Image (cartoon, rainbow, N blue to C red; front, side, top):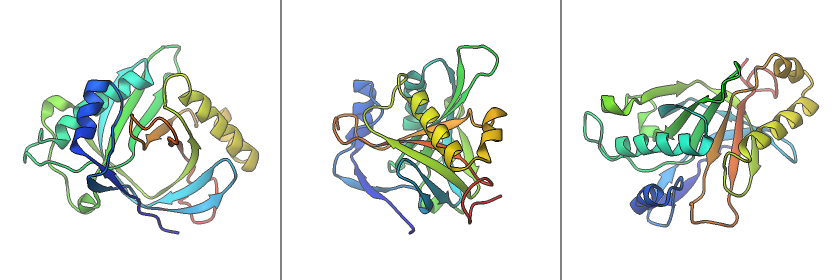
Length: 223
């Protein structure tokens, strides 16, 4: 079933993010959107979604901490959303804020992070305003792909994101043995953390681990 999540956010949300050191604060005021998807496979502990093409404005960060890198990247995106672009365009907030993680494979303690803002659907077929050069942002266009998703509660932080990723990999390899070789070849180090809830929302929080599984899983996934 096609899903389009319509949620609410205030402009004070991101301001509170900056002052409180949290990712995002949401409360009722303006509607905003999330990328649409269909569920092509469902298990008790994960699901596989087919996402169509998605456009993101992305902030690359090289760091040693998921939480600090997310804060740094979102701070730059926040400026872009509030007019730090060639057209001085202001954007509505969308959801989720996605942090993609590429751990180092060479013994280094640092990793490559990319913090992403989902561009509203009006930019599906046109280019968004170019960001100010000093922000070091880039436009990323994802092709249609299948994403394995595991939900987890609480706050996403440096203590739990890798554990949740490992739990998703374990579930995937049990259900789809063909994925085992890909895991052994280190193809599944990269993953993303999607954050949906207000930082002040202490209960009932939902986060997700995302991993690209196109070509390995359910019918309808791109090869």
